[in-house]
Image (tube, rainbow, N blue to C red; front, side, top):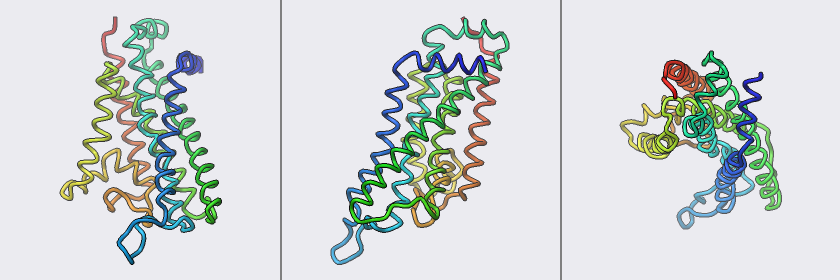
Length: 259
């Protein structure tokens, strides 16, 4: 507990956490605003609209996936949590203060998992509030019944787990710029390409992004490939990725020379 408190003190000692939290909320709300702005519009002349109408249950399922968009900021949060120590040369004193390095690594993983949960919850609250006000004001009836709460919860869980993944990536790549750049490239370039190519769509479902998408993608919501795992299987797979990367990060961090 003392190490976790120490990590939290380090985390809140700068204003970075505020900007990342604002980024999480804004990114989560972008999907809500765009989806509800175009509700009931688009499509061919005389045909059905490209976007479900505001009063349809489908529109709510789409906007409630919003918290998942905060994933990237939560991952960056985890990366900064460990790479900042290497960048500012405080990693050596940190390990000297706690000679058993595994305790430091475990404390960071647990701390940023908790912070990831907190950020995801805040993003989810804003998504629900904005969606409820907007949909009800335009004649719809917002509800968290049916699969809606599962979608919201799945999106929040997916985002939170990336806190661990971020710490693990930062542990493996101590250079902050390289770690964040690599993470962005993988999440926004490599995985989208794999999900768009028919020949590799079957592989995408087993990657972290595909596993995360499975947590909040239901049959009537649609997904990047249309062939994802079940929500439970996707959640277990994503948790497995987080655990595997955490284990590798532990092995590397406890054996790496620091100065």
